Image (cartoon, rainbow, N blue to C red; front, side, top):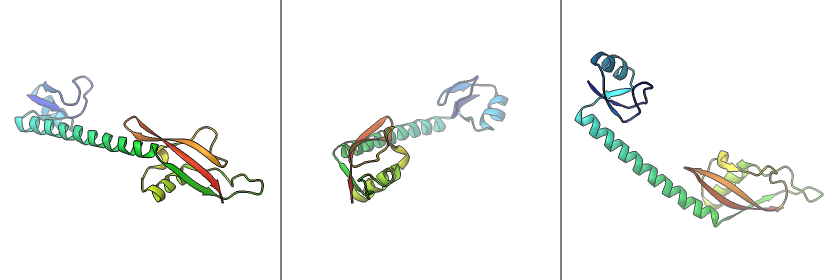
Length: 149
């Protein structure tokens, strides 16, 4: 019996491989547990189509992220924070504040978990370089300008 593996099977092979297995092993274990499908022409054609669609979607996602990276590199994000009596900020600028300001000012939605601050958090006025991990190994640099109110 020929099966198309849809998940990695430790002693058999990797996802996408077509393997010849015994009837009982294929039907009862591989197909029964959802590790494989019977390798018919239709199943193989559908698998190839699904893989091509997934690759195309990933390429589109990478292109979109590269566009956002370029856009972020050209921006300066301005945050207004209250100042204390001695001219320092009340608290530090948080990742959440950066993400919300980016959405409000430029309509770019990012997750606050993707924002990377240096070890010395943003605790004063001035310009800071911020790194944003967009995914697929793409990191955008953003200039953050913190001004006092």
